[in-house]
Image (tube, rainbow, N blue to C red; front, side, top):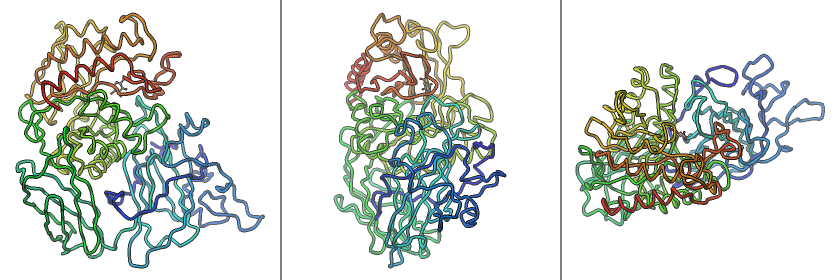
Length: 607
Ligand code: GCB
């Protein structure tokens, strides 16, 4: 539900996603944008609560918010972007302006730009890496569309709408939480609002390569499966060439009526991507005289019984959960440098795997992970108590899943799509998630699908842990969060825990942890001390050894992160303190317990 109680998903307009934006001719719109805070959305609704939107802009007698400038001093225009303050894009607003720290609502962003429109028939699009949560986008006073979902990219075509001088783009970003949204009102992370990722204008040929999917065949290492999608008037019957110069691969395929060209390309002695040697090839896709290049790694991936096999070799996923936050600077992580910092810490910990919780992180994360050889779990914000019976909510969640997969499906590092976190079992919820799982599989037949489930102690037993969730049947990997010793008793209780898990599938413990304030020392029995957290980690890693099907762990969490649910003064002060690294970048004692455990696992399984 939006602020005014109207279901906004109905207004959802979505154009097919253009992938690999960084590989295209483009102009950045990052930098300073003007902004106006509009808690009553008076630029969007008039005093009768009618949407003024575009009509208002055209009707100059109205007080409008859409970039109109007064033509003479008698005109009533109750806003002026030119006199407004600036925000940096990409970044959330909360961490940039003190007055916006707790703000949840609408903010109007405004930016002028000049752009020489192409004269060769090329098309233009405006592309947003993400806007949290709802974005209404206008160019030169005309509405382009609306996007819902705070962590996925979107674009609108602006061909023919751009002039050489004096364009202005306006975006109303609204991060109001809603019961029927994805995520819903209740989360354990900060609801950072704003244009949180890169914004750019992209210039593409009249008919262009919009999307492609290139990966090693799951059952034949000497074959790459390629599919390329063209967009444009002449998309049918077109020749598309695929070249991997370093591997001396050249292939040609032709598009069908839908503009899709599919091909199975024979390859020989390809150097495979793996965490030890994350080999990436330059892959060129050529249509007419346009070349689109990506750096792609090739690896196989499957499960066999309780094993996860990467290039046919069993792996143990030495992971850590990460929120998309730069705790030191404050606010959402948004750049390649932020990704390097977070994944660099994970590497120091000895990780070969990260769980990017609880929503799709920026594209840089998977790209840097590709380069560093770190495997990735990528998730959609189907978190806790979504409205399982609401069709709009399902469509919203499915769109976010589709856009996440569309964007990152060519990243070898990504091995797991997760459809949910800690959702309460019910027939409606299982039906919802089953559909999500099928959707993920139909888009990507290779990657594994999972969801972070819950466990509990079997009644009448001392410490037998069971997962009573029918979803286990449908996922490839059984993952569950468990907080024995923190939300469930004290760390000593971990000594008694044994696991009774069925289905014969690989298992990942997708969360465990304890809160500790860095620098707070004391007895291992005292909550919030580093020693308590350290002891819980020591006992947990011992317990993990008692789960025979265990093939991965992602403790909660790499760094402390902001959460409005964390109210304990002097300790939490608005931070979830389960990080192994503090907000100042200092490591807590438990960091070293996990690092030692991972050294041992590395010896056992290899990198
Ligand atoms: C969980 C959630 C995670 C929370 C964490 C906690 O189970 O999945 O989002 O932040 O517990 O710290 O309570």
